[in-house]
Length: 253
Image (spheres, helix red, strand yellow):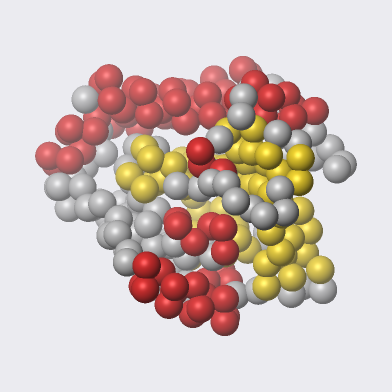
């Protein structure tokens, strides 16, 4: 695999102005029948995907493991004829092996994870989560901390000068609809009411890492961090289906 270098995007911070209700709404659980019906519906309209899995560097043809039980990354490798999207998931038993693998390819996953842990930890220790759940308003001190941490990450991460930009969509295939798309994102501790638990696809402007979470403030990651190609649509189907209509916060860089 060729080395991947993240391009630098213009710094832009998007926060949803419409908040969730005061009590956080968790993503609904789906029955097996509902999930199967959804798979059929999504695969009928989304581009075909080809998925490969590697565990500790070895191809796993049976795909008989859950990547979230390991330390992993999902990569959009290529798109053939604009119709078939190739993904590979690389899972490792040891986290340092994952970081070594990504660093060999200039993928700053370690810095991405460090940023998430920092923002999540501060939300818990500062009382921002409780305040947000009571008032429905994102505390200004938390927004200020996020902005400060973003600026620091430009120096500490080295390879990541600014956080990535992109758009999330309520429908698949990144269909442009002003009533359904959420505009540009970078860090989003709480997806707005309009998009909370309704996101089905997203795209990043540059090559970027994106992590999706079931809860606000970057809690309960649902699928491995995704490395996407510039301006290419990531549909939440196939091995990403668990995150479809469930995203409540996200980080992209």
